[in-house]
Image (cartoon, rainbow, N blue to C red):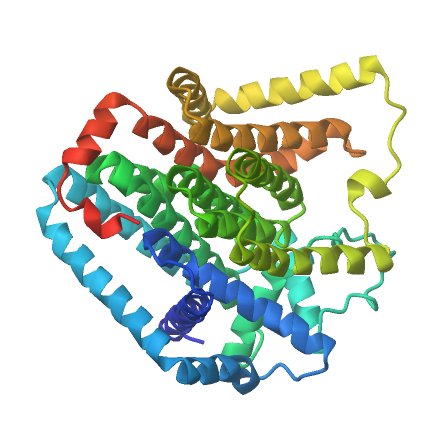
Length: 478
């Protein structure tokens, strides 16, 4: 397939995913704001991926007509809602484009460079060969197995082979199923094009951060935060360097960041639908990589604490919408965990033989981890300013005493602590894990750290006044 054809195919995939996600949001009766629109492509892409999973269970062929047909029927049956949703989105886009003419030169320049960088990523994803080991041996391998079987079925895959191949069959199936949905749309398997679906996560992440921060920071600071999310060198591992393309690390990073954006919105505006979407995106993160499971647990605790507080203070029960969305989101996560356990696909942290832990051994591993991370910070990359972003956010969270910011800070910090604990207690040699996984773990945290910094800056008095006085913020006001 030519580059132009691949670009059109990827654009069509993103557009179809957006339309399906937007239809789901409309049929669910959710109040649509800029943040809900921004996450719609991932909602649609995830829904279609899970649809393939269900088709495999009930033995329905994976065919483009059967994949897209039900959504076309739903759009026709509820055409008034769908047409109204599309019309509202089109009006919002027109208003946004008109607002670009009011930007000052610095903000316009930052946006222009950010768009050019994203365009380079788009083209680079389509032309670079697929050479990443994890992408081939884990994500692409499972996607091909699913595609050939027409079902999520790893039971026939040999676990013990010679020479041994680490395929981590316990990894959740959402990312490979997204590849499969793309392949069903284009009619054949294509690894180079398949790995390019990572671009949909970049679009949704940047748009979600902008939708969250624009009412709080104003146009200039929001543009700078959006630029950081697009252009920070950490993203090279997903969009520039061929060896890392096709991995699911940025996918889970984007899902976690969008979940935090909805969580903050829920706390700021008191909307149960934002809590529901925060839980839904956290569940999608848990269905993408095992690291998302801890994130889902922490988000569930925070949301549960908020619901308990509301009940004891005002006797408010959780809304039916929140319960339905949470139940629908958690079912695929539980289904995969049950499937993995039944077939003996266990995580390395629980399945491999661990060394005899002693205080001296743990202290030695902790020192190795700390030394390695210190050398990372000493390099010319994103890591020093990401650490500084966390320190600034921590300081502002303490000074502002903002519970909403504190909740986001706590989740990001606990997730980082979990990564350090996993490295410490892993049965593998810690030096091997650090050299192969540390940069990807930092990538998973990077979007959330940038969002956290933006939210922390919004609590500064000057930022709050600037945001209130800047014109044109109504376009993004939820």
